[in-house]
Length: 167
Image 1 (spheres, one colour):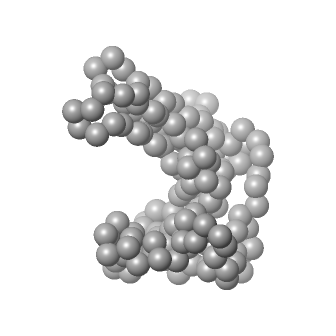
Image 2 (image 1 turned 90 degrees about the horizontal axis):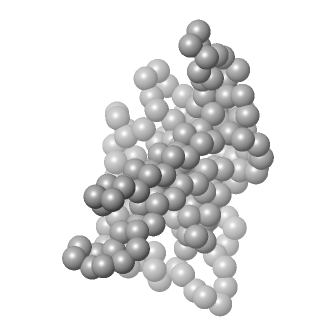
């Protein structure tokens, strides 16, 4: 299931000006697409590794921050922020704020950090936002149901999704 999700997500990027990204995102939430993809899932064997799942190296270090707040009035806030490496871009503003190196989230022709194939939907372009795998997540019971709320976040590239699923 995660291989399928990551394979689909590898085709995402900034949707402004790229209809293929919008089409991919719509397909990811389509009931008919979900039914089709469900047929690929088999509890007895794994999907082939050539499915197109991006590979990223695990990089340790304090490169992300999370703020998860749950208030008494059913207000929930989940925010995950990343510097993308322990000291971000290495640039500090005059007020002392360390700036991130979000440029690393783009696919770079011949320079992709994790040695994966650069995706055209995520190549660097002026004014474009890079794809990010930060996953602030809020889980609530169905409308009108009592229960416990869950608020969590994850980072670490394409490993974030499996972390959220495991929790």
